[in-house]
Amino acid sequence: MALNADQLIASQKASLETLFGLTTKAFEGVEKLVELNVTASKAALSEVAGTAKAVMGVKDAQELLALQASLFQPLAEKTAAYSRHLYDIAQGTSAEFTKAFEAKAAETQATIVGMVDSASKNAPAGSETAVAMMKSAVAAANNAFESVQKAVKQASDVAEANFTAVSTQAVNAAKTATAKTKR
Image 1 (cartoon, rainbow, N blue to C red):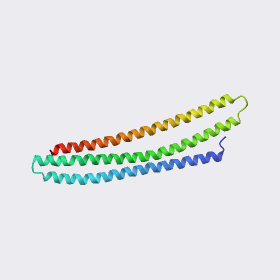
Image 2: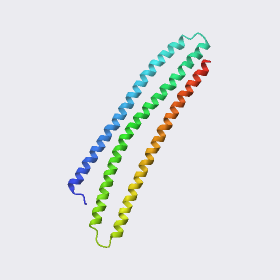
Image 3: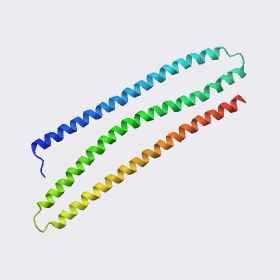
C-alpha cells in the first residue's frame, strides 16, 4: 500500500486543514481568556471604588474589622469563580487539541495497519515470522497508545476533582473565617 502523489497531496491538505483548525481554536481560547480578564478587571475596579468609599465612611476600628470580614468571603468566592472560568477555558481548548490529535493518531494507526496488511499479503514465502513480528509490534504500539490515552484521561479527571475540591475548601475557609470575625 504505497502512497501515490494524489494520496500524499490529500494527506498534506488534511494536515494543513487540521493545523488551521487548531490555530483557530487556540485563538478562540485566547479571546475567551482576554474577555474573562477584561470582565474581571472591570469588576475589580468597580469593587475597589466601592470598597474605598466604604473605608472612608468607617468611624471606628470595630466597623473597619466588620467591613474587612464582609469583604473576605466574596473575594474568595470571586477568586474561585475566576479560577474555575480560567480552568474551563483551558480545559475546553485542550479538549479540542486532544480530539484532533486522537483523530490523527487513529488515522495514522489505520494507515499503518493497512500498510502492514498489504505488506503481509505481498511478502515472499518464508517471511511469515517477520510479518508476524511486525503485526505484533504494531498491535503493541496501538495498545501502548490506548493505555497512554486512558492514563491521560484519568489524570485529567483527578486534576479536575482536585481543582474542584480546593476551590470548595477555599470558599468554605473564607466563610468560616468571616463567621469567626463577625463574632
